[in-house]
Image (tube, rainbow, N blue to C red; front, side, top):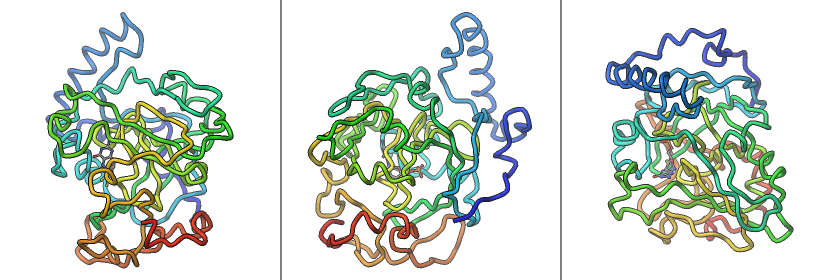
Length: 320
Ligand code: MTE
């Protein structure tokens, strides 16, 4: 892990020329329409009237994180066009095709359960008091592809501390929006909806756990989980729940979507582990998107120094 010199996509809003905004024609047309309608509505109703995502909006006041890898980045188009987001379809290109008009503003997050500061928070109010960071993380899917992604987000632990969980809070549960009108995939029973995920409290408090709201220095596109999604870089990608609307502090281990769907294949922990195979395929190797050759998968996705202590004494073949 090392600190890097800022790249062009890390510059502040005023420094950067959004030259890549209108690269793709379809998005240009849609983006322009959004700016025009948003502009008119925005002047009448205030900024929240900008409901649909427009490419190129830089996130301000972002600093470089100490938790960052210097590996070659996966290009923006791969990060944002090769996705898993079953609410928008099960093919890798479906989220890009179907999520463009997904409304991410205004957006609220309900905080519930064993916590002193429950309530319904505007997502901006949840994030704004905390330092936003650029973090380049390895991103490893259980399907054995991987990427290197420059996320922008806030350390989840900072938010948790402000919300003040009670001493009974041992776990934290997350829930995605349930809105079949906007999310066509929710009209099919491929998973139980809403998508849910969970972490043990010490995993959630680890400084690597990120609540992300951007990629490549820009506001996150819907297909990647806007406006906020979880990133736990030492776990398989399915733990990184997208478009979160509820966070509940619990005493008991919460259910998780993939474990409910296929308990013998997906456990609660889902730590990247080259020695524990998925029942139907090996996890020993991965293919970086853009590379032809496979490479060995690292224990805890290479983050063992920071997280191995969380699992000392645990049988990781049992708690997979
Ligand atoms: N979150 C929700 N709500 N729905 C999903 O289908 N897919 C998961 C995870 N988060 C998923 C989700 C899976 S399987 C992976 S690998 C990652 O999101 C993919 O994140 P990415 O598309 O940003 O690479």
